[in-house]
Image 1 (cartoon, rainbow, N blue to C red):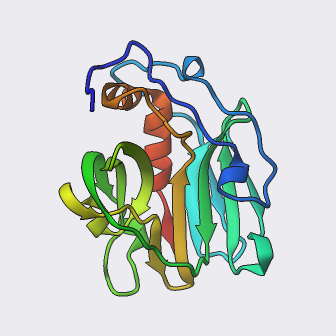
Image 2: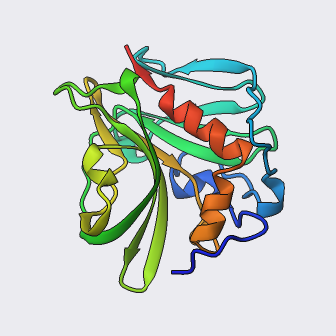
Length: 211
């Protein structure tokens, strides 16, 4: 695929209805709404959200909001959608999820990854924050969230991305809500990594803690 950088990150977000049907949808953010940052990201004032069961919490910019809903069809757990100050849905989190992951082999390119020490799994495995692109046949898909370390293996024949990590109360699912396609090319994805929005989403995900 084309790795040429674009002048503006070609980024858009899904409405919440694509990830959590029980939560009302809002409009998607356009690329022009994503401001480019300086070399040093501004550090916004933060608030803390804790799921009602008291186990999982995270820090997020005080201008953003979090709303919750029960999963559809009587499924267990609690869903949360993180929204920016303009009302755009940025991130889906599901706490106490029980569904697993299934998928085939892909070719994966890892753009970024980082440890998330506050979210160690019951077996001692430490989930990893990642931002990746996967190629399969003639298509590509971008993923950003927490995953098992196996979903950060790079190259041909990797197992497709799984956004569910094991926790003592079931599982945590995290997913930045990209449109499909999220970017015009991989250069645009790299350009988005230089924005405050990317830095703030990454900081939020790395701040996730299980108590």
